[in-house]
Length: 635
Image (cartoon, rainbow, N blue to C red; front, top):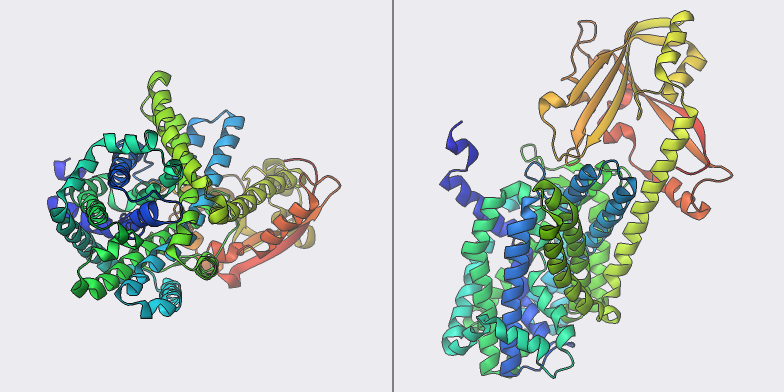
């Protein structure tokens, strides 16, 4: 195979880099709007003395270098699964490596659910703080705009969520160029200020950051780390979006353009404050020339919309992955592009996010107030990623010894815990929001997971082995009619309840009977030749299994076209009927979880999207056969 088959050509790499600049770095690229302002001018900030300014900018530089460049790019992004990354990818990999260790797998699931729950908290806060901080630039132009900040912010956010159903195919083409212009603009503004006070370049020396942390007499030193961390919010996007752009494009765009642009702007803000300490009230916009203020506000708003769009799209993807892996009930998923597989829209997730974002803006009213809530969600997600990647996945993937993996795990865990502790000190100032939101999502996910385990155990007790049941049928008189019957089943070794119910009432079966099971693998995507496996049984009975990755949506009619012929005949949908077992679950004497929690699960179960819609079955060819199953005992 040629070399070009393995490595993208220069033009394609540049195209991917521009796309990565827009999507991957949209969130972290808008951090200059509020990071320095909160570290030196917020409620929990350091006094803007020259020593503190150098210390804060130094900490921002080395945090970006250690967290983004070393931790994520050099280590964590190597833990890919078919080129895909993200928290749930880590969970799938870690569970795969720990097969045969049920306790370890349970711990992995809990860590993964915590990380995903906090990620949704990030998905709520990012649109609120990003758009609000951009629109607040109008207040710098003239205080007359102050009463309109909240209404304008809400209007932008409302439009952003209302247009989600159209997908990002069209606007996505603008993401890269707009963010490229954004990074270029903030770099130029930064260079202008650095030229006035070049002494700010001393902040690149880590000694200033160390002195600030350990040598300062300012009691706010540790809590200020929470504001410094705002500079790296969005770091998880490097790993989560790796499958869309590839590691080379993300790494090159970061090292060659994004990182230098960010640091030039942070250094420029520091230089401005060195010359005028009063500029801490909004150092980003006060470093912009007056003639460029309105264009910069417009550009910043565009950049924050892009950052928000990336996080919202990530929430849609995380919702689908959680459904496929069994952490959430089936929800309606709409594909918004016929050519781009990953572009999806999840209506329920969209509207819940919108309500939460509006509530945040109305409740906190300013980006400074929201900054206190921001860090906890992201640091919690980073801790989960660090534990899974360095504790299990990277060690297993590259056969690291404990002598190598343990120091790395402890090093990065100390960094994450330090930032988490600094943000936790702001719990009462807003940090409670992502914790409570994440706890609610975690509770729903764990309830659904536990309930599913109870359902599987109850169904297993109610069903009978398939092979003996079919042999018994061959000795009894069963009417066979033309066509194909497909019985959906979770366990292909057991007789589906729908089959038992049908025979109990009609003693009639179609000429060809297929027991169809759908299995989610711990892979993002499956090769086409691995999607369908078919096993002939006897007397017109077949077992068929559809295998799919956890990032894929299952279209059963489409996939059945790949099924090998049955008795020499392919499956024709026009003479095929699907039989689904619609179970009505009742709480038994000892249901295995608290009754109020069981009622919550049953409510989720009844309101989940139907299997007909979820698997895209033709509604006119689907029959639901109900059975009553009592949930008793422990899963």
